Length: 304
Image (cartoon, rainbow, N blue to C red; front, top):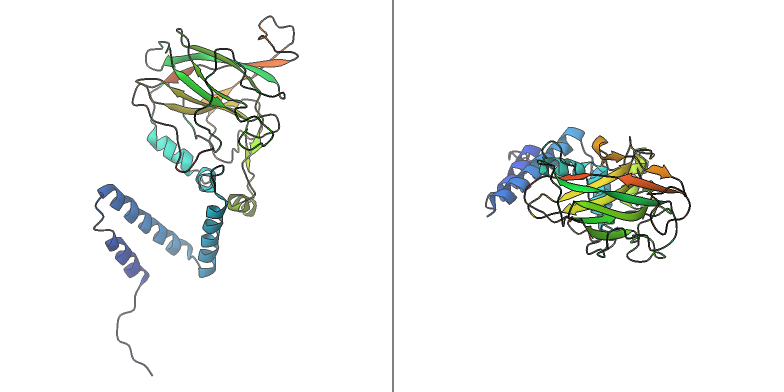
């Protein structure tokens, strides 16, 4: 019989050793993040009694996530979105004064450098959907003064539920554009009424949603990024108040203050925008920016 009087290695010893391996990290913040991550990962495994089979399945999901991710699809961001981490970090990062328009997640289909368009331009470059006149003003959240020259970067999905970056049959710049506010802070453009849509669910994130009985759907919305010198950059959605899935957005991005009414209008309405035929909608939306440092709206690895 083999005798071994050496003390057995306990789980706590492993945690301590891993934590100590980061003690020499040059950046204090990196050291804090890595050691906290280790503590929470090990605590999760201990609390749940994580089995080796479950660990292997988790590693397989991460491997599949890496394989499906490319320049047009960021599956890791989808994980962050559906687990609520994207919205949680957004809430931590952007405390806002009363009156400022609330922020929300960027979403997986943002494309930088959308075309600059004139006031009143139509961002729809092919037919389909209910024409919608989107208009309003951009204001200082503290003073209420209009902000001239602010930039609105807008994008949305089409009536087939797809964004242009998802749809090989759509023009590259379909349903997106950038606009500058006028002297009175006003903006206006033609869009289409957005539709609810599912996030990509043919990969590991979709498998998790199916396994947990969750759906992949998001309510109808228009994306906006608003930039102005001397103000915090606003990344937000404007949600259709009548849309499905407002109470169960799969990425938890709905905020009551971001609900708006898409007003149905008739063909003979005297305010009908030029070029619009048949029934149409209007959407009024005032956007209030908080003074502060601008930031670029981007996510790691996300280019679409």
